[in-house]
Amino acid sequence: MDFSDDYDYPMDYNYSDKYENYTTEKVLVFQHQSTCVKEVLCVSLLVVSVVICLLGFCGNALVIWISGFKMKKTVNTTWYLSLAISDFVFCAFLPFSITNMAMGEWIFGRFMCKIASSVMFLNMFSSIFLLVVISIDRCVSVVFPVWAQNHRTIKKASVVVFISWLLAITLSFPSVIFREVSTHMGITVCYNNYTLHQHSHKIVVLSRFLAGFIVPFIVIIICYSIIILKLRTNRMTKSLKPFKVMSALVAAFFICWFPYHVSILLELNHQSYNQSILIAGLKVGSSMAAANSFLNPVLYVFMGNDFKQKFRSTVLSKMENAMGEEGRTTSRYLSRSSSMDGRASTHI
Image 1 (cartoon, rainbow, N blue to C red):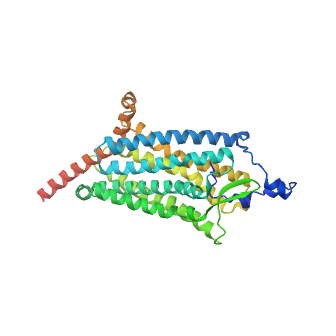
Image 2 (image 1 turned 120 degrees about the vertical axis):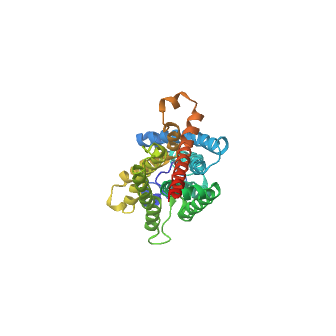
Image 3 (image 1 turned 45 degrees about the vertical axis):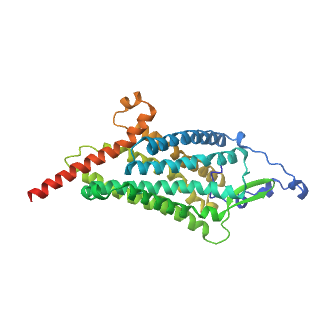
């Protein structure tokens, strides 16, 4: 996997020094050989990537099947179905990157170079935007239960999901613009060509960091702070268990993506850091980011109320119960709140 998505390989690797004794004729027939099997880090990341691909593909396929075909369609299943589709598409494209990492070069052409990289950022943006939407939805349901009971519909949720995906596609488009393929000294690489504009690299990195990490993080923190304060002052709700699946999803996203964003920000000033350490950081950070795509279905399974009871049940039942738990609890909360508001208005 070319985890260093934002590293300009042809410019940062001095191939001419490594092969300076070759004549021009010999360079033209130079045969590249992968060195991944000789590097412990590369082999480790290769194994991890294969595991992520297999678990993520199968796990998210199950979530799509359950939330899309086995469960009653609700606002909550609409959110989680979209999240699963995002992760499933990402895992479906992982074999291209795994092959690239194993062979040490890109063999799939210019078109797939652009698309494979775009899918990674499409997954990042669509996931975080959906997590923001779910957080806002939970917040509105708790603070304005009567309004949510009357206006929270599947049709509106579908529209919001569509807008989130459209925005994610738009923000992923820089990969289509800047991603290129180049061959040097017999090695074909898929890299980012930021030479078209002087500040294009910085603009792309900072926009991804702000739109895909900082701003969503702030919005989610605000929403959950409001939810916690509201529930603690509400006698009907004695615990925050109904929101632990969502909380785990948010925590997993930020833990998995934070190292990647740090590495990319450091890479903006790569002259000040050791190149080998930067590349290793980018590879590890991107591996952690990819791991988020298989963690989501795992969290659906193991974040139920009674783990022992769910452990004895089937895998499909675990997933269905975990995903439906928040929907059932939110519905009960909205119904109770509506009932209390109705009684209050009668007394007045």
